[in-house]
Amino acid sequence: SHYQIAVIVGSLRRDSFNRKLADAIAKLAPPSFSFSQVQIGDLPLYNQDDDASPAASVTRLKTEIAAAQGLLFVTPEYNRSIPGVLKNAIDHASRPYGQSAWAGKPAGVLGVSVGAMGTALAQQHLRNILAYLDVPTLGQPEAFIQAKDGLFDEAGNIGVDSRDFLQGWMDRYVAWVTRHAA
Ligand code: FNR
Image (tube, rainbow, N blue to C red):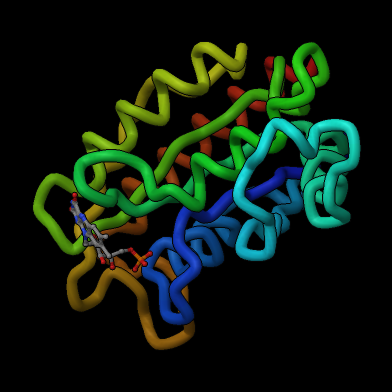
């Protein structure tokens, strides 16, 4: 069978390392998996008053999440947590109460940072949120990645130094999604 993965990138930056990582790691998956990044930059700021009449961008986000068999979060760390744009998207798709799009979708968490801690603290905050939202999240291997020369090759693939590690991560992620989607 086929697995559609909704990829949520926590950066809106044009040259985002995290978006590059999301693009590159998707190429390490088997052909039965396809990845598409959901757009979060055009979502309004979440306001509970709008639950009954959501913006088109909110409906689109929830439809894309609902249609996916798995989730992949690839996010930077902002001030030792997740970026507000990512939290905003998570909040939108979690509402109205009882109609969350997230529940039960198997997920993986990745992040790349210019700092040496490689988004470790942001990932822990994200895991806390996903636990509450009933999203079964791959625990191991963790992937705390530092942006440095050679992380990506000229074609935008994962560079040789990180290839084996991230292929191992993807293999575990594929097994996790396959198991939970069954
Ligand atoms: C950062 N950055 C950062 N890095 C980190 O390792 N820990 C942190 O807490 C923060 N905090 C932080 C706050 C804000 C507001 C910005 C703009 C940046 C640096 C961050 O790792 C760097 O900007 C990355 O390049 C962001 O990821 P993208 O946009 O390249 O995907």
